[in-house]
Length: 304
Image (cartoon, rainbow, N blue to C red):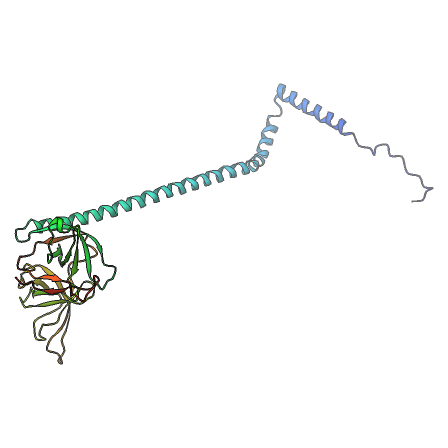
């Protein structure tokens, strides 16, 4: 546009001021209020506006509802975690108590069996507790509670309710030492329960195992046969359970069968044992002069 051109006069280009518009809106609002109060003409309009604003109200409440749901969720999760922790602790405690009760019941049953043997006139004996076992598994020895002050004698047989366990080889004032029948230096006269065949059982040196080295190959011996003390030596009363035959090997090149037996008396599961009173003429176990304290005893007979 050139400077010489003139602009038409626009008398209506300016809009109303905000203050003026606010006054107009306020007057319209007051008029609507007065009309609705006296004539109730705006009821339908108000209901329509309320229906139209329902989605807006619900959308505005979503954050609050979401917060409430999350709070309840995390409160429930925290409460469940606390209850789970408490239940786990109670379960662990009850499991420990149940294991202790089972152990006490097993010890009670074993003690009952030992006391029944002790009360028998054929088995004069006393109950004793196992203190410890030798650290070297090849020594095959145990320490028992009770010694000379409890009238425990050298050579006394030691057994559990399952069978023969060993023999007292050393007696101290307050405790005694037991050599297990699985010791390779112990020999026990036994008989096979099924056939009454008498032979000797020798410790193999392995935990809970014995061998029968003097059984002829043609003898009637089979796995599962029970070995009982024969009572020939006068030390072990006849009829004590010793072991069960587990393996029988026969070879044409050997006159004797290779027989292995497993002891019935378990060392690990026997907290108590029965110490029998030996016969006055019973053979006693003495330590070899060439052996040290960790060596194995050898059987000897004391001369009168």
